[in-house]
Length: 314
Image (tube, rainbow, N blue to C red):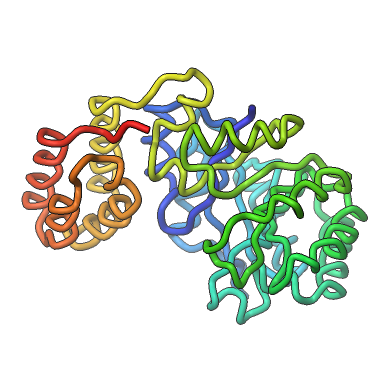
């Protein structure tokens, strides 16, 4: 099974990727959180740092673009290719955020199939890089995906990454595996599965249902259990010492590139929002972490959690 790391805005930037890659080298592709092209064609400071080759050494990284403008996509893809050396670009047609879909981007673009087809025609005609797509199965109804997939099949996609939820699901309800199963038989492009793989039980259930699928993207699953990729590949469970090493690398990385306790703690608290339940009796420690306003207070709460609690066994 090839494993990909999903692009989660604000979370899986280069600091996270480097810490994860150092501790758990089991990812075949890291997808970089989306770039939103602007009218001047400039990258933000965050975007520049995220795509710099020196910040992605030793890993196969793929930038992602979020736009409904073919011209903006082409200009950004050209810059990523010529200035940074990327040969594959991923198009974001999956983001369910209301601020994104209100601008007809991400999964909001799926509600306009004719415009989407014209957009894809332009970028596949003119782009000199390979293009993959990360998609949901519709805006409001799974029935939309049959037509959307017909459109995708008109173009030479590098890969089609399917998160089988509609936009209005956000991350609620179960992934629609019936629609995914149908897509496997219809898609001309290689298909990668994405959605709700949080444990070995989830992984084993999915692979029993879909033994023909050989590529999977993990997002929230590796935030909740950073050792999941290695467990899948090597059947070796995460231990506290390894998790502490990963945490410390991540924390030190943010301390080096960010300034101010508040900014650093915002990043770490976001991380703990996913990770904390991996520990037994984590609630009081998570509360202290969430309330911490100074780095020494945060460090004390984290040390206590690692010292006094154990990792939950499946």
